[in-house]
Image (cartoon, rainbow, N blue to C red; front, side):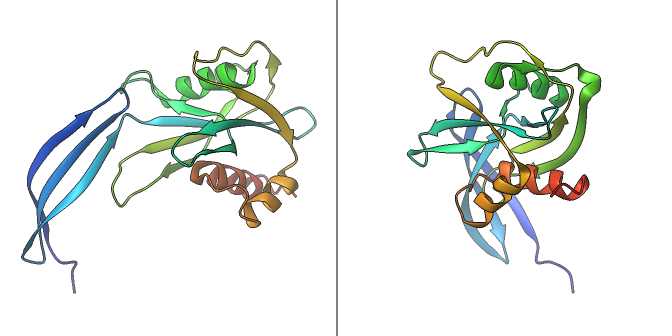
Length: 182
């Protein structure tokens, strides 16, 4: 028994922004015409920055969509759809945390599609080691505090529902599992 056929009949542009493009798709699903929202995202990268003592550098920042401050792994959108995600991760690490590393010290960890029901955002997550102090280079509208956390404490915050950001949950749990960090 196969999946019922879905066919896109039309895609109408509703909004085009810097990193998002919003469409209304007309589809034929199970023989019925439907209208689905679709958000195209340029793509992004995230990084799990590991200090010499095994702590994870996290960023605390205000998120307008949920109207609160969040604790997240550093991340950001690609500058260009063709930008390699490892380059984006390296750039965002330094911009947001004030620490840098060489590209050979960035290791691919996982990929996450954040909201598959209506958005194609894809984030590649990297682990960064051998961090060197540098300088934050925030966008003029960014206010980010950098905090060092143990993996154990981050996992506890995840399981208490205090960290709800999907990329951060995936990054921390994948890192802990892959490297057997307690």
